[in-house]
Length: 286
Ligand SMILES: [Zn+2]
Ligand SMILES: [Zn+2]
Image 1 (cartoon, rainbow, N blue to C red):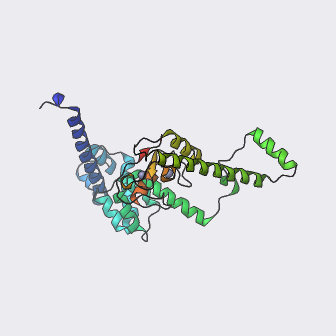
Image 2: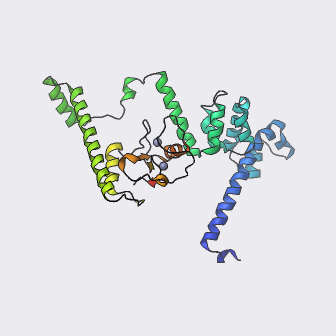
Image 3: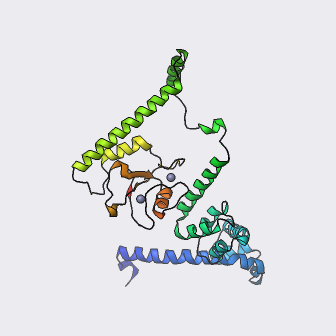
């Protein structure tokens, strides 16, 4: 059949099929470059450099060539990752993410992760690991530590006046935060009861009250501590397929990376719940 007569679905299927094959071929080509470079084979084909060789033969950028050569050097003591690179099984962009944290001691761990996780999830996991490591090493300097709290002048003025009267501002704010926590818990319980009454809402649509509550508790950011990415998906701690519902305490707004990690059942700080390989798509956050 002529291309213009093919149905949309078929055209898209062909794109997906050829696209995947093109990416695989590109990974394999990149994997060959360190060997080509070692043997100086680019000269044999009349090219001026390995960069020209890669650009003319496969449209690969100079930066990408450098990345492969650097990674392969770095992986000299990391045989599993080296193999993943030169065989073209794992992309250079994904391997770059782990290069900063991988050691011969933790290579096993990372070799498995790069096989099963997406590039985004690998990057998230690396960030979590680095953050966890940093917290163990040292407390951040004070000006770094409270970078998200800036009081509007009006509020600062009010607090200043109260402090001048001898009130303990720390305790005051503590009480305020406790009160907020109690209010949220109460709102959650109420919502929970209401939803249980309404014969378990099994629709995938997230009720607007639940959305509002999640926003009140977590803001619009990922619920994993220390993560500042926007929450893009709502994760079900007890999976949908096993009867988990849309009750607020079964839900956690997460960024894409942490969501994938929750389902892969790994993470420096577990995002919670999520069973390995459940393959379940939880809902969008908004
Ligand atoms: Zn999920
Ligand atoms: Zn996150």
